[in-house]
Image 1 (cartoon, rainbow, N blue to C red):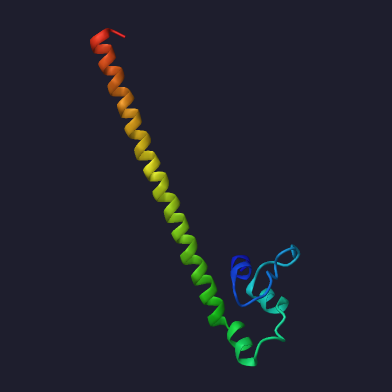
Image 2 (spheres, rainbow, N blue to C red; image 1 turned 60 degrees about the vertical axis):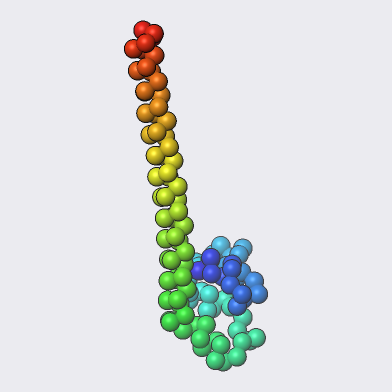
Length: 101
């Protein structure tokens, strides 16, 4: 919810920013949001369980993509490191064999 409220175009401000006493839950989002500028239809839509589910699904998708990128990056770094280690071992074997080092 913190991610949503900080980045949503629906709200003018991040309602959880500087409000450390309240947990960033959907219920607190509904309670803390000033709804006077919204039509009754908009308020009903933005406070529905369907909207809550779409917020969490969107966050889950974004977070999974972020984690997958981190995993892919770390795998690539691991592969590069394994190649470097193999190259060093090959070089050491060559030096031992040809120069008795």
